[in-house]
Image (cartoon, rainbow, N blue to C red; front, side, top):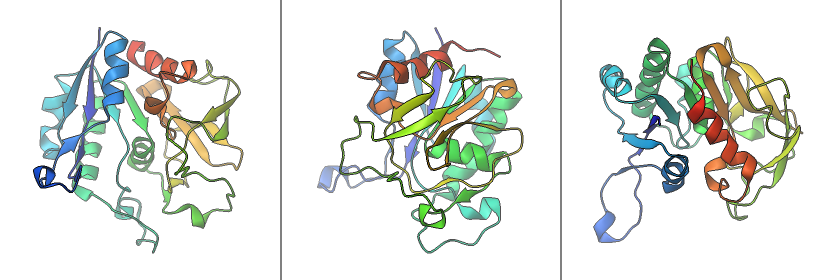
Length: 236
């Protein structure tokens, strides 16, 4: 049994009813459900001061970085594009410190959506701040199609950590940013049919990240459940 640390998403107003007029830290229940179903324990880590990251890493065996706000472009040396959305530099700084600590203590990291993007930036890569900067004609933000339904294909490297997925796999999609320049030491292991990076890894450092949201589909898509099984059972 592993203890999975999930870095929470901060400062989100859940509802506009008076009871919820407070800032909160949360994660999707589906992240908790999948790891508990697989027999593991979950701790939700609050965004905190970066110097406390090592304290949190000593409490867990593995780290999950989830979705949320855009990564601040200052971290990869760009001015904000006019289609940049909400950023959270406090979360950025804490998650960079969490990645530092996970690598120091040799603990695997799983990134999902923003989690992939922040990992790419941490390793020196950059992002398309909005998909309008690309030539893609694929709808990567599938709303109003419900999140549990896959909507576009990705092509999976069969020599990678995701080799258990079909070579052409159908995924859901909720993002307007994407990898532009790949970070040092990272390998792109899945691409959309438009060429955009959909998954990355660094096997030696225990890093795996995907752009889609298997936490939304793990109960209906067996391969998406296997992503969590693979991560929870891997060791360095």
